[in-house]
Figure 1 (cartoon, one colour):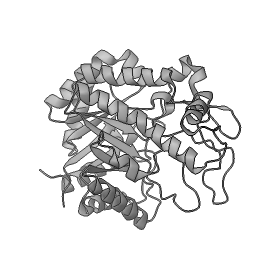
Figure 2 (cartoon, rainbow, N blue to C red):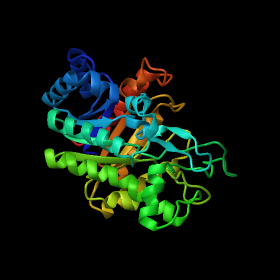
Figure 3 (cartoon, rainbow, N blue to C red):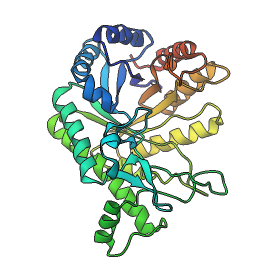
Length: 343
């Protein structure tokens, strides 16, 4: 089978003339889509060029997605958060220790207003094709580990605002343990902000395609990651999302893990009539035999995945997270895309 969409993430938002050259390189590497990784600083400082770069990408035939990259450190991503710098009282709080964590509590009015404002600004002013919710998650305190070596029993968020909301809903104090009520509350609140943001975007730009990308974990027996989006069924059921996506898997893991995650992704996407998307590691870590990149791409294509994306352009070349053979990884990914892309 062949896939409908192939792309990579892209950080180069500063100068349109350089972006044009980079986009041509993506096209030459058999990409037909690009994901613009937008940090809070980028949106605040480079906004005029974000609009121009999006126009250039679309003129060149690429589908453009906007990634709210690392915003509030609630989404995945390396960039620091301006919101956290300016709003230290709106952080997530550890349930066990009560310490403030380096992530915004997305239940607070301050953060919701901030995030919705960013989404509406992008939807009104940037002519992109869609938005990408990049590994949204509650902060995961790891002050100690479970017996299996996974996440400890600590969790977030138990800030005063979350405690008040929980008490209003359930009529009792929010426990420090992950009771069924606490788990349900966390799942509901985690989904609410993304669902609300997606509806606000579609009210402005009805054809905008919304992709929600959750962590690719099998943690369903001894431990779970408890990030708030662990219930894939609940996430995919949300009619505000158009694409159900799962994240990168390390090349060091066995092939059956790749197959298992991908089959689960496909099953959930099909159940709720969503397109499916899988991500490929194209930075930091690489397989010993680079042909494994092709093997994984073909596996995903053969299984019926609709959209394939790699993080990131040029294998992260020039960054501290570059793959050891970054440009060779990039070339191998491009070759693989060319072999599976539906023309």
